[in-house]
Length: 360
Image (tube, rainbow, N blue to C red):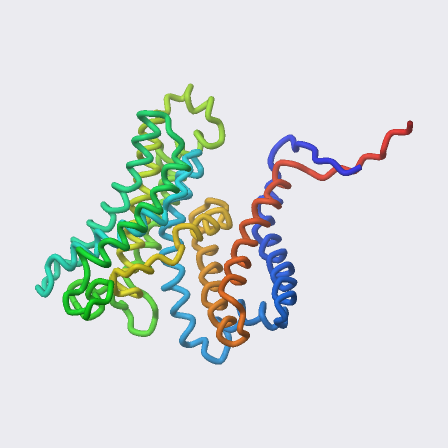
């Protein structure tokens, strides 16, 4: 008989190996999925993971790794702080949207003025937009004991309605011939998040993602607040005896994750996306949850996981173009990664034991 036995203490080896095994399992079962769809599985996996880095047009795709990876890392860093403390922000997508709306709105309010202070104002507005949206589940949890998972998730759909509303109304381009969407910020130099080094994919959002990684690492390793975050997640009862303020911790974790998600939205709308539109959001807020867990909630791991997930985004687009894979299949492939990661994570705390059936 096969049964699971509780380990005396979590396995450090399995904790490190789980992400690698999850990626391998995703490749195997993803290949089976592609084969069922009538596509060459080996070629599909090779296209997703090899072409963006070493393919014929890799000189074009490599900079896109930074463009795609930066918002994922920025959002995932914020989420990881809450996840470590048992604060489950599942609504980063909504905070990402509101950050983009606030940031773009702040920039367009000055149009067509040219001034160096416009972009910093957009950065502050974007962070505030994400922060204020995350404060709704934070205050409801601390004051009324509501579930932040449900509240933050439901607010995503409210944010999407706001996005549609401003695209058709408040931020609609008056010179857009009636089409929904704002002015293109790429044609507004003071509000454009341009590449810092041409052709590199490096923009201010990438810089912010690196700063967030460093900030989170220092916070968790060197600061008392970081110790409280780790203690609350690992030993909630001990945290109470240590005098940890749960209200302050919830407000900090949700507020920080919301602000970082809002920044990601602002950097995206002012750079790669260029404008507020009905279909502006592409699911970065949800994908960042995969990135956070794939990186083991560790800042450096999240940075590496963000690069891997960006690789699947770009490689998936290439596979759709070259092999005719449906977009839904790529989304399922990415979802498999989280599924196998969570499933295999069970082995960190449990071991598989074989027991002979007892004789009758």
